[in-house]
Image (cartoon, rainbow, N blue to C red; front, side, top):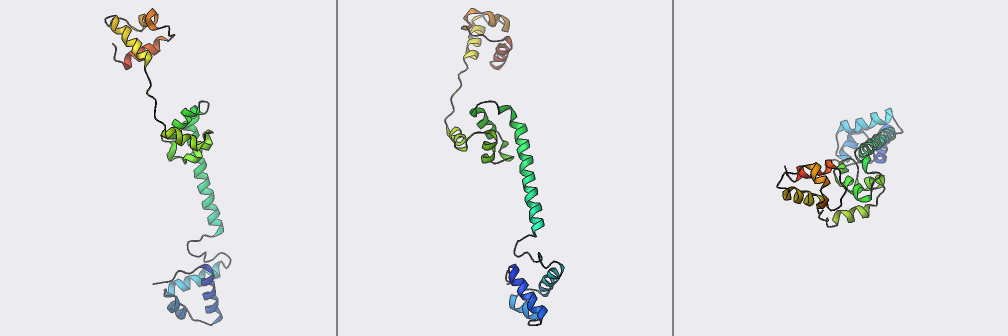
Length: 186
């Protein structure tokens, strides 16, 4: 099985070959690798003595810099996309911001980054996530349904709006129409 050599080891073997202390075949036998591999090392060092043979998994500095910039660019694009999708919650309270983070914007940015971008704490997000949900009581819907049924299902949104038994709630007609549609009161 071939050995994995770091950059310094490869350079040392190539220098020994160039100085005549070892032959290519001796290096091949010692490292249990192919003649092609050793020849490749020699060509790489002749081509670029400073950055040739970056080692096991290493990259040349300019390629490493390029990959880092590409990664940063992807992150910034995802942040912009996240802001586009969640800009409506920036002026709202933390509950809505937590919901925006949970709603699926996670695939764009990490939770840590999303919390930082929306100005909420990560611990607050996880507390909110694990908090039991309050059951929302639909008071208006119940009143609209009661008035509609008391009128033997003849009242529309205009009559229900002016009905004094609406409990003193000021509601626009469109909201009543929506409640009637949600409750299938027609």
